[in-house]
Length: 83
Image (cartoon, one colour):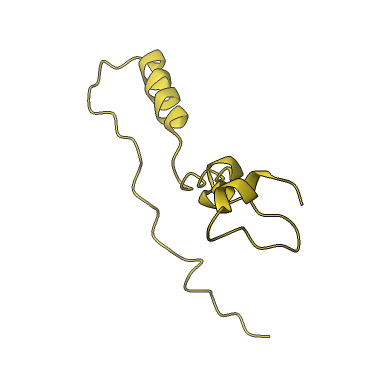
């Protein structure tokens, strides 16, 4: 075994995410700002909403198992009548 250091593990410390520049800021004010920023979230993008099958254009076609939709002369009547 060798004692090599991992170059990814030895990195410079990251810059602070929040820097207070007003010396008269109270701890309560800092806590309020941190609470607002943490409530905003971030990081992972929002998931795409699931599309409802009710809004699918395929629902506009009346289909029956094992049978293609009616077409041609009288198709509108055949679409509503049971077979």
